[in-house]
Amino acid sequence: MAKTSTTPDYDKLDAYGVERSRKDDEGALVKLRDKWPWFDHIMRMNERYGEQGGNQFAAGITYFSVLSIFPLTMLVLATVAIILANNQDLLDKVMDQVTSMGSGEMGDTLGTIVEGAIDQRKSVFSIGLLLALWSGLSWMNHLRIGASEMWKVDNSPENFIKGKLSDLLGLLGLILALVVAFAVTTIGNSGLTEKLLGLVGLDEVPGIRFITFLVALLVALLANLLVFFWLMVYLPRAKVPRKSAFKAAIIGAVVFEIFKQFATLFFSNALSNPAGAAFGPIIGVMVLFYFIWRITLYCSAWAATTPESLAMMTPPVPPAAVIRVRQEVRTGSTDAGRAGLVGLGAAAGVVLGGAIRSIFK
Image (cartoon, rainbow, N blue to C red; front, side, top):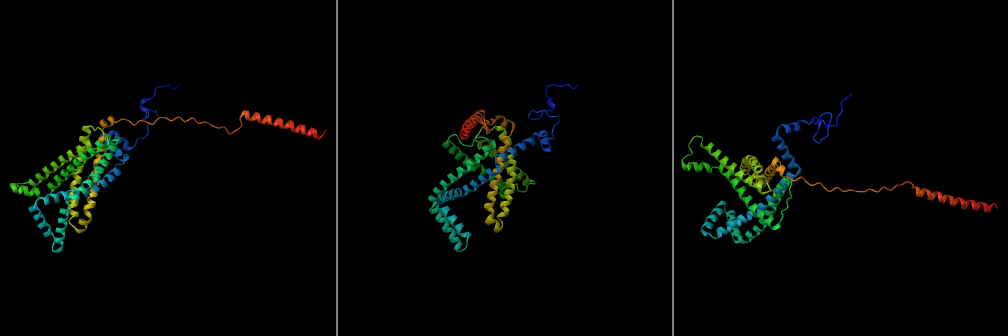
């Protein structure tokens, strides 16, 4: 007689607590995720990025990034015009340089444009400032929405005014961080380092160029690390574990530096021919921003899916159960209906019988 027991065989329980006679084949991907925790983390990051619409957010943030460039350019030009208007010697040098860039009427046209920009510097500055505030705050707000979505938290600020002030500070910090990060890489890849080495007499030292490149690369990685750590902590409207943010910042710094090296080569080659000079910059800027925000959102998804970050998350509350009482309507006849029909038939029979008897009387 076979032995029976109500105790489950724990070796045969699946993830849902159901005892099965045989274990289903999990597949190669599941086995790799069980074997390597780092690979499982990458898959969690990719799943979070995809299910929260990472690509769509990156594209939307890119739109607002490009939109913010034009008012920021107006601000820069207006600021330069204000400086030139208050310095006549510097203005004369700039005008001479501008007119010498073109021959004949072209030089005169460039000079007229510069003079017009200086004359209208106040209006250009005012319009540029208003447009920069509007587009820049929208840019930062959508960037924070995208990062918050990677954390599955509410992306709306508790207070409207405090939220806009926080976005304004974040916008200024973001612009400064991007300028510093790209400036370090650009200086490291330019001929400025060779000129500086020549001034101090180190240009003939064996291997100095490799050492200089290595130092510039390390400085750029450090700058990227600081930028991404700030982005990981500041952008989400939630408390971010510093350890998870730092690890995500390391990944972002390395990937971002690789991308910057390719971007530097792209712009240098694109601007060297007429077709590239006409269409290359705007296309390059759009691609540049798109990949920057993809890297940022991927790193946010990585930080949001660490074990310590997942332990901090509050599971979503399931919706309240709705009990619907269904009242069934019987289509057939009931007992009361059948009794009524019988009574009606009997009464009709009595009346009909009386009528027949009265006829044949």
